[in-house]
Length: 250
Length: 250
DNA sequence: CAGTGGTCTAGACCACTAA
DNA sequence: TAGTGGTCTAGACCACTGC
Image (cartoon, rainbow over all chains, first blue to last red):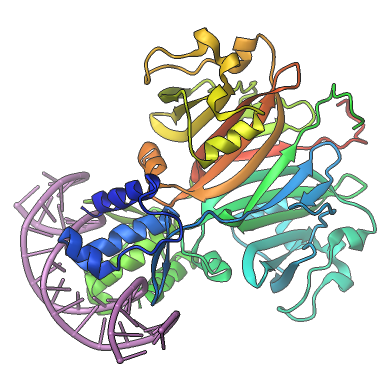
């Protein structure tokens, strides 16, 4: 019943009968119109909300969602040069102009399955690794939750933040005085868990783009394991592969 | 109230008090234990379900979720050689051993925003492009929903399926008799819409990994625009970047 | 202030699963 | 068959928004 109602409303949106930005009838009105309880309408609305079809504004109404703008990050597979959006710039390990990154946790002795995997990637024992958690914001809105793992030997005094919050992450690349090479990058998607959802200000279970990867210093030893969970709707990564037989210079 | 309950149960899982696979008390029991209505418990459960923390089995009970196994696809950025899981194999444009791909829609005259974008990428007018939708399954379970756009000129008679369902997608690479080069690949994450959710047998709004991209033939002209929406929990893509100064041959 | 969505209750019936 | 989760109802109170 609620699914039928959701499908009906979705069909109206697909057909253009309900245009982006338009306010839907209130829950009570829909309940009356379709002869069902308001909770049933709410269930249909929740479905459409999760599907990204509508935007629910408390105290105001429910609106047909307008497609969102994404931040696209382009990476040249050969040179690893990155650009964000239309602006051409090198994307350092931590943050980029316009974005604010704030550390909210520094773990000296991490634990758990994810941490163990990170240590394996770094060829380190769990005790020799530290972890830094941060939140990246763009225009005052949570954009990604980040975790960085690195060997304590690399981290050394000046890298270790004094407190546990309010510290800006120092670029590992800067610390080494040399550029880092991205050995590999892994992309996946997960639903936001309770903690991530709260940090990013999104609904639990909403789609996050996960980007994990190992970077290494000039000595080719794995130096940094990064894991970002990014609000799915607001980001995408583009990897460009210049053709090896391309006439242009690489 | 429901959020507090969810947080409480999540804490029990995090602390190991509730181990993976263990059945939680029934909704009625939890309602009694916490002195709330069953619907409130259900709301908490829905939250944990969306967060991926529990698995709800109708008529059976609710269980602490066991981490899932993912299919990982590795791609060498320099050579574009792909491997799936532990088995080393070249991943053709369509399907791979163990996977079944079934066409469920062939559109001669696509429309809509996404289609227009695809046409732009292919340097074609909307009327000159065709679109093929398919569902990839692994072990009888929906794995990804795919859309392929290609110029009708390339598609030509032998490519055009006779019916609208039950046809295996012919590899475009095979059709051309030449390998395709991946010009770029874009990764993002979205929640499953009503249609995708039904096809893949997942909940509306559950995280999907989206991989889009343009491939070109030997003449370097864009020939195929692909868009896959993959169940987030069951896939990840790894891009490996061999170091340019690496001692091994590239 | 009126109207919206957010939450909670008590109670009911159902479909499904496993013993 | 007993117990589970899935759905729906009718009614209530609340917080929030915009006028």
